[in-house]
Length: 104
Image (tube, rainbow, N blue to C red; front, side):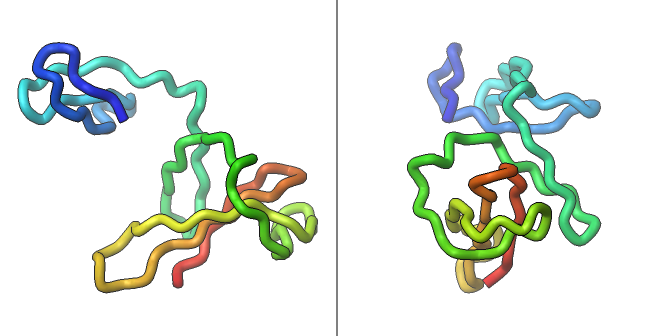
């Protein structure tokens, strides 16, 4: 989470002309986002933006990685659709770091 240095409101991450920026919806201030920690996953021909994060604190489950066949992955759930629908379960392989998702 990032706060605007001008008005102290929460800034959101937006794509403008194929670049990512933190943008303040209140005052319009924007600054470039450091894209060195981004991971883009293509699932079902959709582009899914997953901010790279340290998953070592996440719980692990026994699930087979579709990329390398490893049987253990970190897991977390994100509410990516409306509130009355199930969350999206993300997995990241503990060996090759491949990330995939499953809608619940």
